[in-house]
Image 1 (cartoon, rainbow, N blue to C red):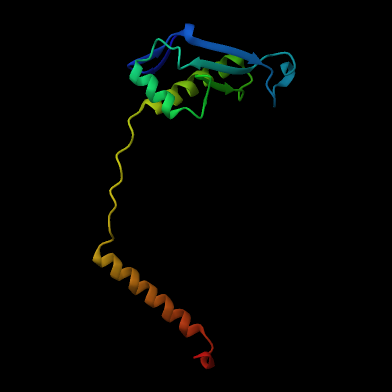
Image 2 (cartoon, rainbow, N blue to C red; image 1 turned 120 degrees about the vertical axis):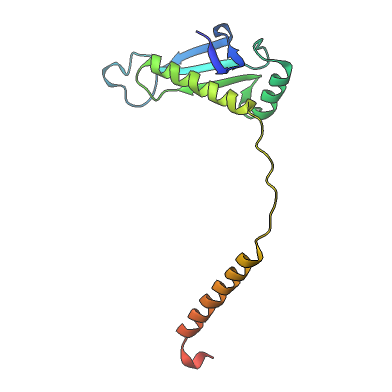
Amino acid sequence: MHLEVTPRLTIPESELGWRFSRSSGPGGQHVNTSDSRVELTWSVVRSRALTSAQRELLLARLEHRLVDGALTVAASEQRSQLRNREAAMARLAELVAGALAPAPPKRLPTRPTRGSARRHTASKTRRSETKRLRRRPDAD
């Protein structure tokens, strides 16, 4: 079963590494026997599914998440190993798709309009007057 990240990128199952261990937290009657925690590992450096441009982009944007060029995602929320596998695959796909997405456009700095500046000043003046009227009469 391949992992479709975007319509242009599909990670073959042979590049995905799975590790299973006992999950902490609730698990019911099988909590001590079932290995329901899932770790999914994918090597960005050795992947043949990526173009060189995609690889460079992923290495730059996910460098804080990579260990020896590999991206690892864990899932242990569900009691079922199958559901945790699905959650880990979805999480990996979301991470990679987010890292490959184009950067949002830069925000252009703008100035407040003349009218909004006047309203702002007027509200500050009103507030100041309100507070001045609350003071003790002999404080002036």
